[in-house]
Length: 398
Image (cartoon, rainbow, N blue to C red; front, side, top):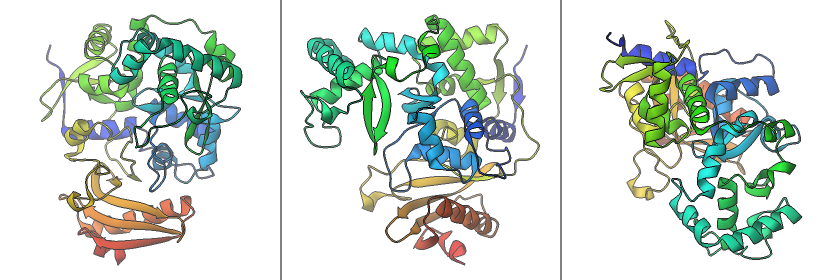
């Protein structure tokens, strides 16, 4: 029996709808139930430290709900009534706390020195006596940061110049022996899970590795709607052989449907209940780490959109800018913008505005200007200032 066939447009609309970007935004101020629904849709949100506009984990919620209180996310992640926890999901991520048992196989791998984080794994193998001392200090004094540690707390300088104490804490975090209690600014304060996670979660039986991984693939499939095996594996950064086995098992069980998408050149898998809207009417400024576009190969297959993070590219060699957000208009990515929050001057700076080849500036400028003003208001900035770079800048200015 031949797989079902989808057009690129159908696949694109399925993916956008699966991410919750076609749903109407709340008319009143979004609350805790709205935030829970976002996480139910997307599965997790990646955390990133860059704060030139707003830290990335705040942006996917804004893209789906509109202007919400950032305190809402902070309380859900680090407050007394948390329903999220931090762990290595995609990268460092915020994940619904009830799914913590699904990651215990990864924590066990970390303790065994197995996993993709080779540098921290090596540190764990070679420094267990020191790591046990750090764990004892967290148990006694937590919550603590790396800088609070009595031993090994001094960094060596540079972005990745982690102290010995920080390396120990990261190994313990990866291994599930400590977790994030809260944050001080953006600095993690660590504590033991027994003082952070709900008792009901801690008491949940640990699923088998295969059962947990199948459930993670189900969550990824639901979040993407239609996806290749590589997409499904990447969503929770699962190993190649594990993901391949789990996908095959779900296909055999009838929970994933193999499909052909014209132009993709590889088998894709349709999630149960995934639907392609006849029309998509939406617009959203997307974080570079939004789950719709975080896997660049998928973004190119879905949207014909080639995207590169240029944060680490020397300024003179950047094509589009330092912190560039794709802008979704209906079912296409129509523009990309280099944005910066000028907090002192109370302005949202549009440092470049680049139109995609398929888009018309007359169709794009009005709705994009409205989205920029909405973002500026949400960030308490006020004025939007359009600067000169990019062929969309003049139309936006007008």
